[in-house]
Amino acid sequence: MDRHVAKVLATLAIVALAIGIPHAAQAVSTTIVINEVDCHGNDWIEVGNRSTRSIDISGWLLSDKALNSTAVGHVYAFPAGTRIAANGRLVVQQSGTGSAHLAFGVDCTRGATIKIGHRTGTTYSEIDSVTVPVIAPNTSYGRIPDLTGAFGQTTPTKNLANYGVKPILTSSATKSCVRGQTCKVTMTARNSPTYRLATAMTGVTITSAGVMTVNSSRAATFRPSVVMTNSFGSTTVTITVTVR
Image (cartoon, rainbow, N blue to C red; front, side):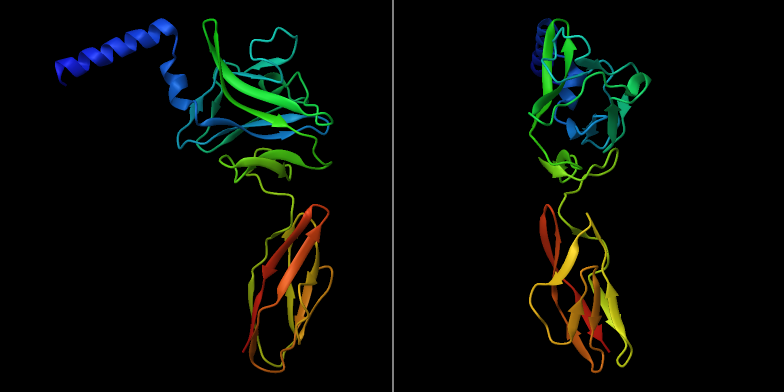
């Protein structure tokens, strides 16, 4: 290494130590995030690791106030040995015991701000925060896409990948049927929707429970648009049914 470059790097390292910048904390500051919050009783907060390596967050702080707050029970300190797996999650909860116990709750009737960060000497560094708004019953507030996206109302998925509250198709969007035999397609989706055709289509019917019947008297390809609706909104999907 060039002597001048080495000297500069050494000087920067000394300055970093002098002003209290923790090398490890700097390296992970954009990878540890608040990922999901549930505030409808027995509240819990999920912290996520966006990186492809396990990260130690021993001593990091989680709070619904300032990280240096002296309010009793409102600053949670992650105990020694706390690690979050690569692309993983860690949950602390009011009903938890030991290192999983969260002493404070999250007020989602008025909104609350949750912060996570760390302390170096007398310096507190906030790494991530989220302001939780008033949200509907039976929902949480999380990042979509999971770990990386912006916050919105989500289906509670503690320790699992986040997904939205609108209907999400979980069955196949394609099906093959035999000409002359009964052709039925049973659709399934997350978040309990009802089903209907977006527009009427000759030879295709569907029940509100998602059972589609297709006329199989002749070989043809049908592509009906199906609207899945629940109390949070609607999702439209196209189903391809081929009669051979």
